[in-house]
Image (cartoon, rainbow, N blue to C red; front, side):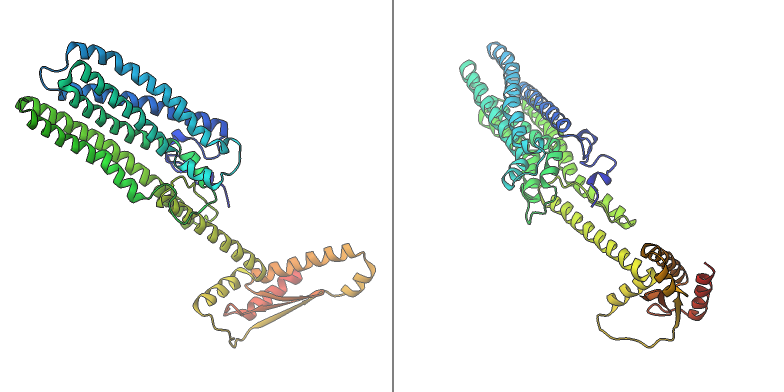
Length: 424
């Protein structure tokens, strides 16, 4: 089977040009993935910090955060973001690459390494959850010490930002690690998903992209009702702000979820187009651990079977002729009964005059070379005139015209083949 790099798509073998070609060097791949994971880590933490600042400004009731709490937060937020990036790089990114060291060593992973590799995006997400869980406690504690009246709101705001960060981290982590997932799944067809099914993934993304943000809207309304001192204007602003976050964040999660589902299907669709065009020796990279990955692996198995069948068909056709091979396959597909049929056919006998004296007087190598050239002419002309060489006997050959593939002018074809052989 050809390499999967023989079936590129418009956006690359992994659904994006950012992930590089299929056969890239392991060192280049490691650096590429490390850069993508580091960029993802920085981007998610910055986005989380912006969500915290924006929601805190809109959701904390009047008169708002005290000057003391604002100063402490202005220092704590960037310090914590930088610390989270450093810790995440040392703990998350390097830990992930250590899990994937089998690829750097140029060997196939064990079953345990394969499962651990496919779970790296989940591990990175759990790392972000731990970091932002600590952030939730830290900032809530600062609010309790400096301005207890807004402590609950700060806690909810940072907790909501934690969900945003975790969702983005999982989506981008799974995207960045597709080349490693493809290497982990190369040559395997597991009977069940190795990293959770599509149903679990869709349910998780619904919770992150819709459930939690809508729950934030509900909590905001409940808090306003319990306080009783929130103005209608402030409540409206809070609801509008959260609504915009829900729309934007939900759209982001939906887009990346759709791409995660569509990219494997697109790779199968493009490969099916090539099979339909007659290219059976194709394969696609399997980089998804869900049922979609099983679909990709199933296509590769199907393509391998078709390629093997085509090779057998070509080999069979070389021995008996293309028309006979097609007729034999058609007959075997329509009926499995053994039997025969009565046909009127033409038979052509071809013999080499003087071959006995030639074999006795010339070296064996010369005689074999002569016979090979002779039979090449016989087979070529019989095949050209739609006949079948039934057998070779020493220096003679027997060809049949009109069976097993029917031939209306079989006598004419046999005579034409005989004249052509004699002439050549």
